[in-house]
Length: 383
Ligand code: 0PR
Image 1: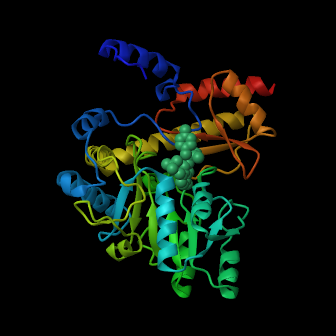
Image 2: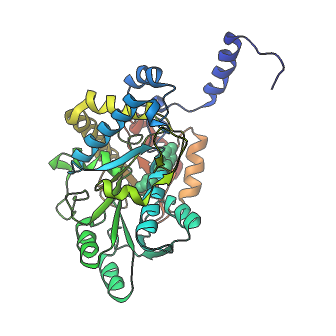
């Protein structure tokens, strides 16, 4: 750090140079991200709520009220008016929070069944909390093997089960209804990771739904104790905005830590000082778009998903599954190599771990013209 400061103009000009090195969503080259350009109203809201801190809610009563209202709105979307929860930094913190609840509610060394397709944030939770994970295999449709779960809980004492509604690599939905039955019958905590799918499934038009998939994933299922649902993914909120919702307020006691010098003397979130603008943006965007707005966005993404899948197929590139939501996995014998070749051409996709494939997340910034250009490049690399 220099002794003397520089002018505002110099600061901004210097920053602009760095910012120019970043990729931009609107160029349509980012095909492997679950984030997108936030809704334009965000800028105005961020400005208004810039310094708000929900780590000390007594000082920011209005922002705290907004958080309660946002949780109410998301809760209602997930068929539960009594939901309790927080808007936090993202899906990772949400999943860590749920694992913390299981540990404090059930058992210090909690035994938790999680599907092989689970996001790596659960591995962080295990690492931090000494949890025991039982990795459940996945079936041929890339969802959790429910029979394995049923057999396992018959033989062993299990504290928690995790189901995924919108898996990171393929967008598949576990049979949460069956997991819920198992959880209720055996008094097991069920957490659903709908970090991505939470803002997709409720807005999915019937014409995109498949007969053999059970789309139920929320609190309408009796056994579901908590849900991760991220506004900063398909909710169009700026980062950081993750969501953790519990069935009701009774779960708070498993998360509380004494915070005697704050305006509220118990703190339940992992992060202390935390952004209020995320909450305000999520509130504003949900109010502005309404269900109708989100349905429109999800439908557009689904149309482009179908377009991409069809177009790839025309060139002999098959998808691993018929897409369940706006995630496409294209079969590729050497995804790592193809991914780095694509990068050299300015295209950014991600790769799957559970199967040899490239993963494309068809976010709202991905348009048909980008898909056309992408397929052209992909085909040229393969020929
Ligand atoms: N749960 C699921 C099902 C997820 O897919 C993710 C993130 C998380 C939890 C964790 O969420 P946070 O990253 O918000 O903590 N999955 C994305 C992925 O791995 C994250 C991501 C986002 C990756 C944007 C790249 C990117 O550009 O695909």
